Image 1 (cartoon, helix red, strand yellow):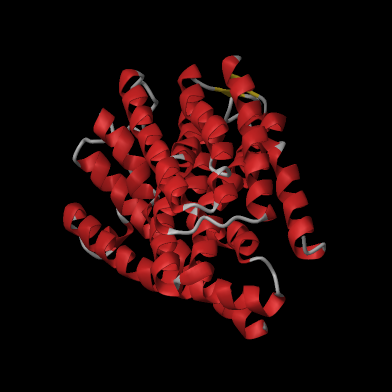
Image 2 (cartoon, helix red, strand yellow; image 1 turned 90 degrees about the vertical axis):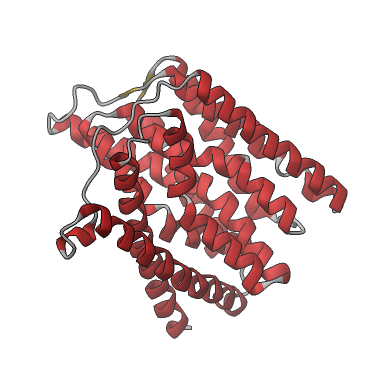
Length: 331
């Protein structure tokens, strides 16, 4: 068991490093080719930066196959919004408070654009609906709901086009490989290629080890995936949100996190419905409940254009409760 834990940590580090390299290179390329300031960039950016999670999801489905692979895929789909709503938002709230005390921010609360209400509405409404197909156990129902969620994503794209005023980054950090390769464009493409290859290898190992640990512990594979997979893949986005929150770029900080939550509440759910039997357990239901409650709370604060730091940290309660229920009480 100890050996599995060691290999799990190694695979998490490999996926994390590859995701960090990938996000760094893709953000630079977006900035370099001036797509970050356009509608296309606003829509493509979450798709690009969520590729590490998509790779893990697809590898789980096609490498493990059967119920095991589907369980990891489902855990990944529901785990990302849950971790963002609990851990990521909570850390942003703590960092915002520290930034205020250190006089790097004017306020301990976050001043955000009401445009952020759009993605939060999608998450709040659609994520609970994703539970419905699991009740019917019907291929036709899954396809119908898959088309519904795919359509919802297209509607979201249309709404974002009409409200394309999100704050965007004005600059991007140079690719890390440029310390070795002087030409930044070449360095970014080489880094991108390397990160994708390493990501594939690391994700394959991560999925396999999570499955083995689940069998050894007799724990829910979905429940384990909800916690473990995002630990490796969501860190780069969370780190960016923390930096922006500390510096007072509040709309950018929250928007960077909720942008991918919309993908997981629409497009990725559609993928899961199309490619798996969509069998859920109590862990999926608990994660959806927590995410929906936190998203509803965020909607209220966004309507006031101010999110207090303690409102952001509220989700940490759900994370602690989930860990206790899953790993100590074995629910």
